[in-house]
Length: 128
Image (cartoon, rainbow, N blue to C red; front, side):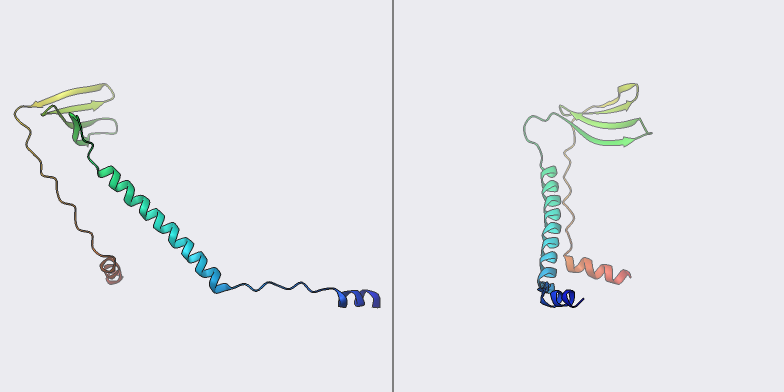
């Protein structure tokens, strides 16, 4: 028994490495912040790319669509300067009306200004 105690007393003790909790927490928070920033950057980039108008010879565009039922919808289409009202359904596509005359020039609405982040936070604080 004394031999076992003697061996245990002489055995080197395993030291636990010191962990810098503040440094690790800072590293995790910076990594999380970088991931969130990448998500917002990807969203901003996709919005920018989707809002671009494709130049060139686009002679056909859908002005407006309104669903009538689960499978049918009515579409207002502009083709070569004329507007057509078409019905789209399971049976196919039908021209419902062709508008005569010139197409009025539509003014594109200005995008709504985005409020600063501090204002959004203050609104959230007032609601609760």
